[in-house]
Length: 265
Picture 1 (cartoon, helix red, strand yellow):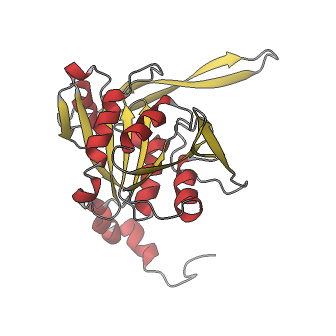
Picture 2 (picture 1 turned 90 degrees about the horizontal axis):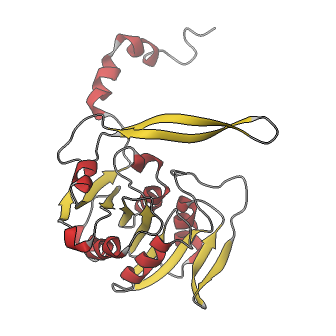
Picture 3 (picture 1 turned 45 degrees about the horizontal axis):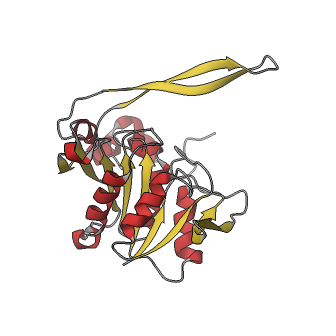
């Protein structure tokens, strides 16, 4: 296989290095990743400034391309321009920090895999549920290998990717893998207000991750119990459960049935 590896923690992170080593057990690897930390940028694209691709060296060898853009930029630029052939799969990670529940929306790691999926390439994201940058990545790398080596066999539907979250436990305490749904936990946001040396206030995002609804098969709960969670997610945002209701609702049916410019001053 020809594998495109990217992330949102930056091309020099420990997670992407561990992931590359694992993917090299499967096939040929090319790395296209941000040149700096890009966590929580979601699916942002760079449109107001030029992108640059700089060869990045690790241990005296070319490791990949460092891009001055977002994770989604990296996949889009890599597949369309930088790579000499189309990758068979896209693998994003290994992220420092969980990307379960609502975190998947904000995550640059997940968004990079989503971009791969949008381009018609089987894709997956891998995260280790800890923000400890000294954490052992070997378990998450092994899980990434196990899932990625089977990704093509799964024949995922168009628009669907796998979001994989691994617990921060020793291999001896790891309970295995589970197929899960996205959890219903979310952030209760807050901002720490501080004062700079000029006496002006600035704000630092903090907050608490809270349980909105307990889901036994939710990714949060499964990871908390020592399992790796494999969650199929997709980018179809239509809420089909209320589609017909809105079409027939009096508040909208009247304006939707108007002729062009009718009833407007």
